[in-house]
Image (tube, rainbow, N blue to C red):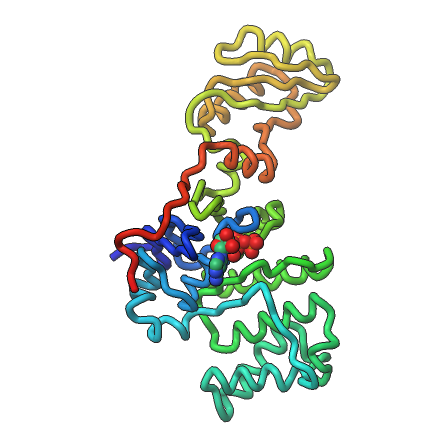
Length: 327
Ligand code: ATP
């Protein structure tokens, strides 16, 4: 049996000749927080809706905890919490009534209903707002209400579509903290967003989508370092005192090339990207008597990694619906 909690293989979904999702495959281990990034129309929402059993793929397999989501949707629905990017407010409905209504709609009743409603209301910090009509909430409070609804059935897999869109910095931070606590509680979470830096902080791995295809799936550290496992890397070295000993060391030490001399150190290229090789060089630099106070590999911003990926040749060719389309 696979160790992956969520397995997605060769997912295809087209609308009127447009392949919104074009052969998407990825795996998510249990307890991971994964970001789904892509420009408008990249296929994020379509992918998420397929995972949430709200739509059927034209091709491909989705397994959650080993259960085929397409063949046995009822078995997995209770384990999935879906938070859509659009959340309509009902008029004349209080926050408390709304959560209670969706608790009942989820099949909860009696003491269990009261317990879950209280738990999610407290978790999302909505207790003081329980009597407020939901169409008078701020955007951040509305997002918290939507999360409360999503958590009512205590799902172990959360699919959050653009949860931070339109939130001010304070509300975004509050939302990020809620995601952190949910991760600590062992939830597996897939979040889509355009705010790359924010996803980078929250997520274990990031999936980049473009025109319906996955361009890259990797951890944020690897993305920032450019994903390379061979070749050279750029290192910034900061020292205490005169830079001459550092410059002399770089001139004679094999594998190093000085790029820029600085007032308090240097930027240099090293001909090996492996962490162990860099660690050995740092040890050598220190034992050779250079007063190093900071030594770090240059990292790209996630935005740069994303833009670079989009420059790669497109994987998607628009093809009309053809053979293999399931009715
Ligand atoms: P955004 O960030 O703007 O929400 P997205 O990455 O979530 O974009 P999707 O909403 O999945 O992208 O859309 C992917 C493509 O599929 C787009 O070209 C969109 O117009 C198209 N599409 C999505 N749903 C439908 C539909 N129900 N009917 C027709 N086309 C659709």
